[in-house]
Amino acid sequence: MGIVSPGFTGRRGGGKDLPPGQYLTHEFPVLSAGPTPHILTDHWEFTVTTETGEKYKWDWAALMALPAEEITKDIHCVTRWSKLQTTWKGVSLDTLLADVETGADFAMAHSYGGYTTNLPLDDLLDGQSWIAYEYDGEPLDPEHGGPARLLVPHLYFWKSAKWVRGLVLSDTEDLGFWETAGYHEYGDPWKEQRYAGD
Amino acid sequence: MSNYLDGNAAAGALSELFAVDLTAAIAQCNGCGNTTVFAESRVYVDAPGTVARCAGCDTVLLRVVTTPTNTYLDLRGLTYLRVPNS
Ligand SMILES: [Zn+2]
Picture 1 (tube, rainbow over the protein chains, first blue to last red):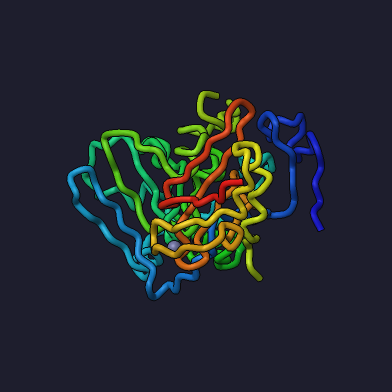
Picture 2: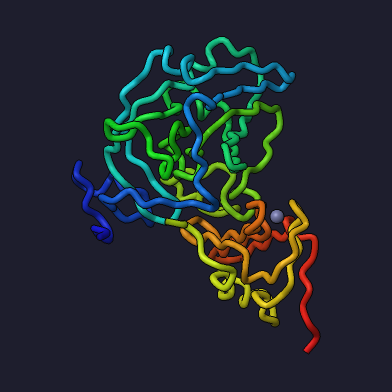
């Protein structure tokens, strides 16, 4: 059963945790625009392709060998639910991209199943994004994007691509799955950038 | 448990755009060529928009996003829609 509190119930007081137009939920709603891919970690691969076509690849063992971080962040879905203080474990994109040679300004995240979403590369760096593979102390459930998803909690949650399998870096900003169908190209929840033109 | 509905679930979103009932139309998938009545497609509504996919190959046939000011319709996954003349 859903426990949904309309309006403010932010736990840090003052309602400052909830961006405009959002309500608080203690559930973790599952949104999906297609069938849930079931990717075995044995078959999982993450590829960064630069603007010159250079490819950098990690398999599951390589991801696990990288330093992991415990992450506690609020998440905000464009369908208006927010969930506070969610806990994740994953590898920072700073770590993954440290040795990637690029001058690109934009990234397109690609997922198993065909989903895409676009982000400025700067929004993936400086401790702002992760490849997350645990949620709430458990391996990430396929429904929530497991075995690994992108986590970019400062933007609306459609940017945190489930079942992520790679990033394609580019000098030009292309639009992803929802961004080509009317959603905002950037998606800052605090500026309520839900739709194109907001 | 499946997380999709049949094509009739898109009827509401499509009726905002079309004067005819598209769920009865014949649709051809651009991915696999599968040709079926649109109502047999798989429709995902627990998402920021309505997404209809081919029951044969999961290609996105159609997307509808309704914003406060506009409705976006993407039909690129459909080779054609065939609607009987009334
Ligand atoms: Zn098909």
